[in-house]
Length: 383
Ligand code: G3P
Ligand code: CA
Image (cartoon, rainbow, N blue to C red; front, side):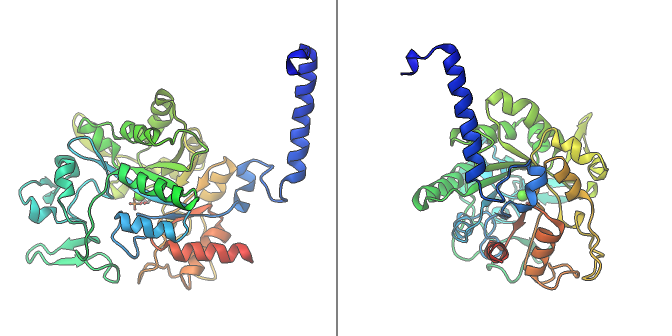
């Protein structure tokens, strides 16, 4: 029948169908469906819970067990920190060295580099086959003389118990996609590209490799359930302006925000590593600059609520307001329920979440305790 319609009839039909779609859209949308732009409506969208390194409050960070546990707890996204091996494989590790969470020191005692006088066993100096031989544990620090290990979080999973190993990004994606298939849910990935400045200095383009791996597993569009995060703004801009267009992908990007003196990011000048200066990210025009290449920011939570705050006097920065004004989502890190990890101005873990999610107005949180955050958000939305 369409074949018999003239061009002008087709245009009329098309206009009528368009109007019908708009009218139907208006009538069926729930009252709070975002008819306005996200920057105005962001505070009424469901809050997002991101499992920080998995359910890392309960099981060793970045173990597949911790990821499966987070999945079962009902999170929206599960985080992967990604570094590269000597043979260009992508592995899920928070640090670009192996010695905080594996037995690499005893297995390969001589394979370290000296960094400011400290021995560090870099993942990039080991093949995947070597890394797969290592036992993975909850994080620890060895005593300089006795070598006795002290747990970073004594109340968490005991050191070197049971059996965990470093996984590849592909293994983790297959776990999450497999669970999405078997449960019918659509839980997302939240992938951090770790130290791209370091990897590129070592001749490895980790960002390109991560994007290609995601593309390989079908993550190519902004609407796909994946965020890519990075602390290095030079790299985040490169991903947006060069890598994604070249590779034919368009994924959501998050600019993580650090303090300069954390030495999170470096640039190389005449072979010398210079700390990247983050000062511009705390100025009034910063969010507008970031919105040109990113979809969200990931600030440290103390950048939003000053640690000097009291229950009666919360000192809230204007970062969230400024971010929302230019359409950026805000996902601060990291919400922990361990002793000493709840700021003085909050009376409990719930109170801390309430302050950030509903008073400061962030769009989601990174947490080591996904069950508590999922439960809090559910109770809040039922109210
Ligand atoms: O990526 C968000 C948060 O994880 C940043 O902190 O050091 O735990 O990767 P970090
Ligand atoms: Ca991270």
